[in-house]
Length: 199
View 1 (spheres, helix red, strand yellow):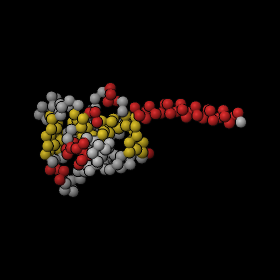
View 2: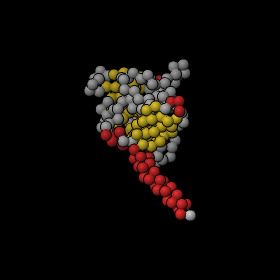
View 3: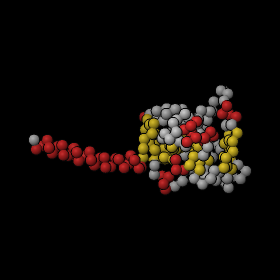
View 4: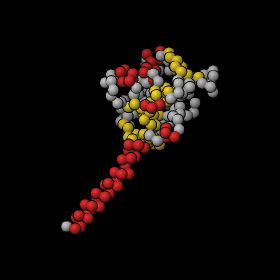
């Protein structure tokens, strides 16, 4: 009887210690995220299991090319037919940073800023665009200048993504974190999957 009590006590101790270690990590450092939909094809597919790093952006600013998970702004909820006030998270790629002017000309993205006064057409090897299928997305013409704490995000599947082209800027406070790890599918396990910073 004494040995059973000892076993129960030790088991409870292990559970409590494990929770004390895991829960802070789960709620304040990293969180799981499962991809739903195909807006990030071919970089991420439906049901990919990801870990989102919530710490990095407390120490440094998001960068162009980062893949992030964020809380969808109200206009994005409306356009995607989600109830007002519902908390929904999307995964997209940052293409525009604070201070940038982002110019969309169909499938081409140009960035105008202090470093690129004449404009830099982004080299985006990750962008999935099916040229064989006519798309209204190819006719989008837009120009927007980002203020402090404002970002412009787009899905890699450029002809099938609800993103800043439709619902506008993404405030920094909406950003949950950057994609740190892909854990599933197992044959695609990787650290910082999808990151691109060679523009």
